[in-house]
Image 1: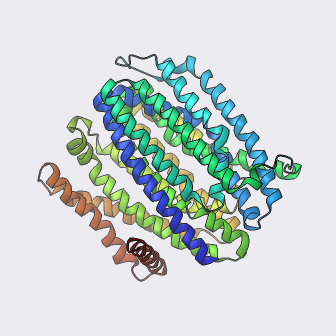
Image 2: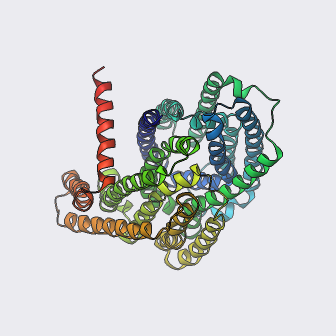
Image 3: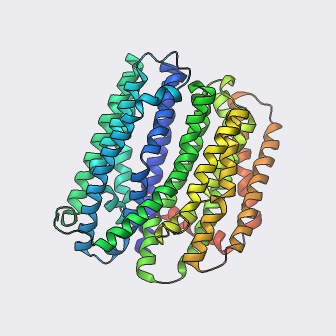
Length: 515
């Protein structure tokens, strides 16, 4: 069983990694195309409307995680009747969500004039653009619920591969048609069609894999289980709200206080950090079904040891990526990608990278919170963080602009999520005090700050212009965090575990290359 879980993690992580790399490249290409062919205003509008729809999708986000958790045990026990009952419940729920997103999205149209500021070069009606985004988002919910069954069965590589191929085809058509016609609605139409096709492919695949679960419409979940599901979904919506508020409302406040052009400029930085963050999250999330299966079947305390190893791996990756982002974002965007007018103050880069680090460091805790079903416990934490962030965004954004908004997010994270989620997991899943974790967290944070500061100082000594200087800075940013981690942790069990995972992964890749 352990071997099977590890193989599933490798397979799902590999597919997720490929998908995220492709997605990063596609986002990079499309953003470059938008800015050069259509202008900053269209790029800002695209980012803003996407963030608004994230807020409208809160119910789906909570339901999605709750579904996967509820399916772990019946899938492990091959309880066909229970799985079919759950899927009937989710089919109705997702249909209602799709309708809700459509209704509430259209209800937002009259208020767009108060959110979108200074868009003189948008020739299309922004209301029609927003409606197109709403329809695309809402349409995806009517069949996508079936894909959760694929993920809960530790086969998320199927979803990743389908997404990779359809996104590549979509990107190719967008590049060709937008370059030729320079019309924003071409992007909207292609994005809608690609979304429909992708969901149809995944729905058909789920139908083929699990006909016994999806075609039995007679069985229903019990009243007691339905009540529990609603409680979990409600709590998860509030948890998800915090993430959406932290990421989505920043763009809304920047648009309101500084204009959509600033949303586009700062969006270049957040696009990169979010892409890297989502890449890490996908890899960590690919362990979730295996961890959930272990908890459902083994009934042991091994998850605490596994958490320590995953948390260390997450820190290593977070430290490495934070250092590279802190040092390289401005040189890459201002010297390589566009020009110096697209650079921003380090007072903006600093909190953006700090927010990135804190969010990445929540992924390990989040995995064990979700797989242990700790949805209701501590539900008020994200509510407090969301309200705090909105209040701070308003006052700090009004006084200090963009940098104030990102510092507000940092304060909200540090004072709430950075410590409280761990408290819940340690109390209800590990049955231990979290003090050692907090101490370790501070050590990890201190080492990351040391890595960022040291790398930034060393890179400031490099005066070679353009690509040559950027490559040297990149080498410095890549070496410093790894040297620090090796020097401090090389004798720990978690470090040896990390090397063991890397060794197994390398052997697996080598065997595939030699087939």
